[in-house]
Image (cartoon, rainbow, N blue to C red; front, side):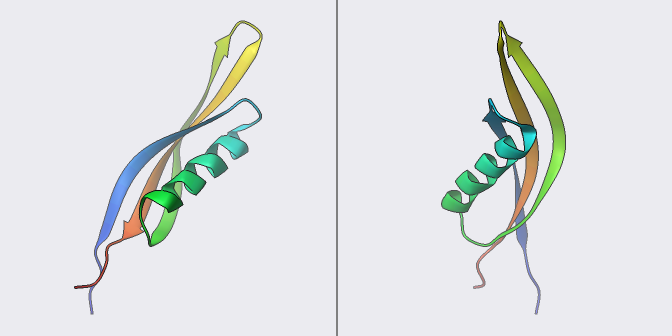
Amino acid sequence: MSNTYRFIELVGTSNKSWEDAARQAIEDAKGLQGGLRVAEVARMDIKSTGDVLTYRVRLKVSFKTPSR
């Protein structure tokens, strides 16, 4: 038996924290496709606009593709 996985990149954002940004991206990914397997943090940064900080997390997310 073999498995096939699909990888996509997502960017989550939050005004609270990097953890919250990652959590929101994963929650959105669950709604996109079934079989969410692994999320890997590829990059984290902060965007500053005046007094507002936006935490951004880029995730590499894998999904198990449906069996045929």
